[in-house]
Image 1 (cartoon, one colour):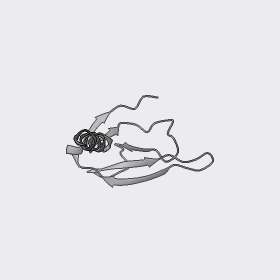
Image 2 (image 1 turned 60 degrees about the vertical axis):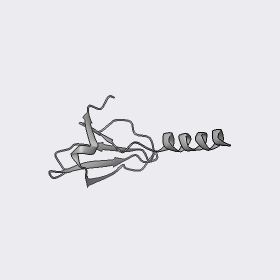
Image 3 (image 1 turned 90 degrees about the horizontal axis):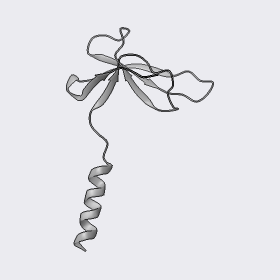
Image 4 (image 1 turned 45 degrees about the vertical axis):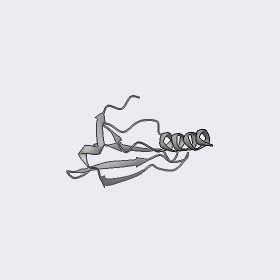
Length: 80
């Protein structure tokens, strides 16, 4: 019984998403439908980043400026 409980507890802890988000320097060319990417863009005011959500074929991506605390994010370059 102890083994079963420990396996359940460990699987729950590994299944939780990471709290840090990656912020890209440029918008990715390919983005799967409903996939979200955060982009540091000049079109958003200071302290905010652009949240880009992928769309299905024939529809435009959704873009919105959202606040992103600096301690939760890391800045990387997008790879095409």
